[in-house]
Length: 544
Image 1 (cartoon, rainbow, N blue to C red):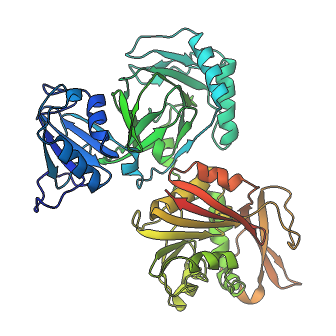
Image 2 (image 1 turned 30 degrees about the vertical axis):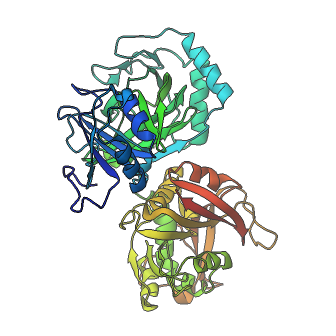
Image 3 (image 1 turned 30 degrees about the horizontal axis):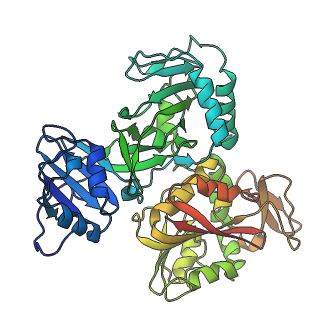
């Protein structure tokens, strides 16, 4: 949406999804409450957005379809619904509605579906992190402990007390070990993400209907690179706004029992908050808030060092990836390309069933062997290795240089994307998730993603059996491909007798279900099919 004011359509006979409703607001002199408004307008179809200009006395209501807006206007124009206090409504179509943060003086209510295309790097949501029984037990334990009410909501602190006046903790004044229920929650989070340090500070917040928390970034030089929050008792919509451009917003449903994890950019560059209201719009339906309790899990920095923030980025390759992935493929590109001629059948099947004219991104395209599989597709490839891109260019494919952790292509522009033999070269969980987030960002809602990665469970025909999941796989580069003018990396071993150089490629091989669990942490992606091919996991993923 644009930031312009709503206006009447150029053709009044051409209805839109947006309604301008005069003499009715959520608050102010004309206020009737959001629950009543949602109930009244929601009866005619799925609502996507509600902006209340309280000072100016009007509402902007956006429906999912034009048909729903037409039905609402036909039924409500000139009427005085009892649910709205008998106020007479004046309802007209609007050509567009401004976004929730376009300078409105009132309140706003947006359905998460309206921002599904927005991807927040470093944001993960793990539904069903705890069971219903575990949730009930936690709530019972928490309510058996003393609450503090020094701020507008009740809180409990464990490990270290959070100081709201200075937005930090006193690292020299620990409160003692975490109680068992907190320690268990922290350990469960750490098992899910062993690459993150174990939490040692937990704040428990109680939110009653109507309560929220202003958009904020947790103090950068007080806590480490992640913030986690476990939701109990009620679903809630949390808002994420890009700190440098608040017009970029994502609304996310946090279900009861879910864990939201903010790492890297989501932690440092996006503000998160909860609007002060009693209802949420979830999938177009009105959801009344009930009591919600959240556990915020953090790891404190004993020595405050703001430079750590500048060094943290989910879009920056690790040193391991630079030497044992990027450097290796640049060195072996010509030899590697000569061994990679035949497209794999399942990838070919995926590409061949896409409709003619579909726009497809191949992220990590290598020598481009999939870019010409289906000439009826519009395909573009990207890769880190310039020597491999040179091979693609010789074959007249459309390619460009880019790291898969940050792809400079337009959000939602593609009908499909493929990512073949890339994920097993990511050395951290966060990088694996970031690749998936980028794929989710590139593909339109309803599109598909196809991912192939090496399996720990090798089939009977494989020449390899892995002892662990993180391994160095040798590549024996024939002497004729070695550039005598280029010094060999320190890890490379020369075998003069066999006339080759042995390079070591880093790989993380995936156990059964591991990839599916990663995909579950990326909003907007759903696995629809899993197959095994040549000791590789092959996932078909829907963008929703």
